[in-house]
Length: 471
Image 1 (tube, rainbow, N blue to C red):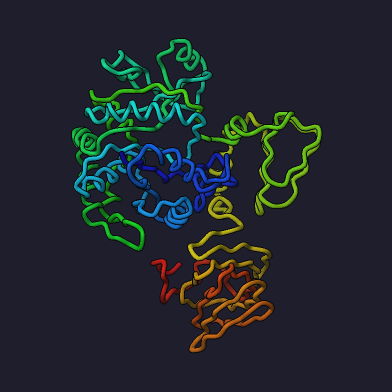
Image 2 (image 1 turned 90 degrees about the horizontal axis):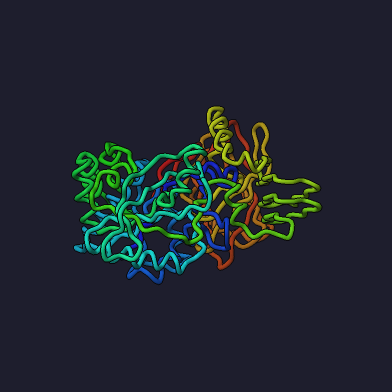
C-alpha cells in the first residue's frame, strides 16, 4: 500500500496564518509537527514504502523540506502546474505507481486533516485494504457527532457480505441545511464525507476512464511528458491544463457500482475553520485555547493565538483572536466560517496579505520585512548552512548587507569575499551578485534596499540551484 497525500489546498478559512504561498498543511496547528507531517506519520506503520505527495509547484520546497525533516528519503513529489481538484491528482498518482510496474493499493489522504484515534483509523484502513485488493473502491464515512451543515454526506446502503462494517454506497449528498442535517443524524445511516479513499491504482483508472476519458487522456499525456527536476516530478503543463477539474466523488464514486463506505469514528476533523481548531485544541480550565505568547485574564471559550508579540486579553468570551506580524484577526467564534469572505474581499482589492506572510520562506531560508517607506525597505534575512541565493541582479534597487550572525560568502561582480559578524557591503544597482552561507550555523543579516522600485519581481536570475526562473 502506498499513501498518496493530496497537498493542494489553500485553507482560506484559516487566514491570516494560512495563505496562498504558505497554506495550513505546512503549519504546526495542532502539534509540533505540521499537518502534512502528521498525515504522513499516521501512515508510517501501515504502508510498505514512503508516501507519494501531489502538490502545487509553488509549494514544492515546503513539501521537500518537511518530508526530509520527517525522515522520508524516498518519497515521490508530483508537481501540478495548475489546480484540477482531487480526481486528476489521484489519477496521476495511480499512473505514476503503475509506471513502476506495480499495481499497488493507494491510500488517498488530504494533507490537512486531524485524526485523534489512530488505532480506529488503522483498523479501518486495514479493513479497507482487504476490500481494495478485491477490486472495491473504498471511502471512509465519518460517524457524525452532530448535525453539521458544512460537510457533504454519504448514505450507506446494504452491508457488504464478508465485511465487518463496510456498506455499499446508496448516494452522496451535498452540504445540507440544518433541518436536513438533523434528519441525517437521526437516520443513522448517513456519514460525513471524509475525502479519504482506498483503491487499486488500476481499478481507479478503469473506472475513471469509463466516466471521463478526456481526464484520463490529459493525465496520461501529462505523466508521459513529465520531467524530473531535482527531487520533483514535474507534470507537463500544457497537457495537465487541458484536464477537466473534478473531485473523486463526482468523477468516479457517484457512478461506479464498485464503491463501498467504511464507517469510522476516529476523532476526525478537517480543521476547516478557526472554530474547528478551537474545538479540537487543548483548553485551559476556562475553555480557552492559547497558542504562543498569550496572557488571558477572566476570559472564557476563546481561541487566542500570537505568532510573535505578546497578546493580552481581558474579560472576553467566544472570540477568535489571531495575531501575525502583519495582520490581526478578531472575530466571534460563531462567525469563523466567514473568514473566507474577508479573504475574497482582500483578493478583490489585490492585497498582498492573502498571498504572503511578513516572513517569506524560500528553499535557501527565509526573509521578513522590518520597515518600508517610499524608496526604501529593510529586511531580516536568514540563510541555512550550506545554502545560497541565486546569482542575480536588480534593475531598480541597490542593497546594503550587514551581517549580524554567522559568515557570508559574497559574490559582487568579478570579486568574491567573506564577511563576518558586524561587517557589511554594498551592492550597486545592476551589479551581478550572490549571497552564500559557507558556515555551520545560520547566516543572519540585515538588508537595506533603496531605489525607485522595490518589488520582488525586480530580479534577473543567471544561475539558481533550485531551478527557479526570473521573478
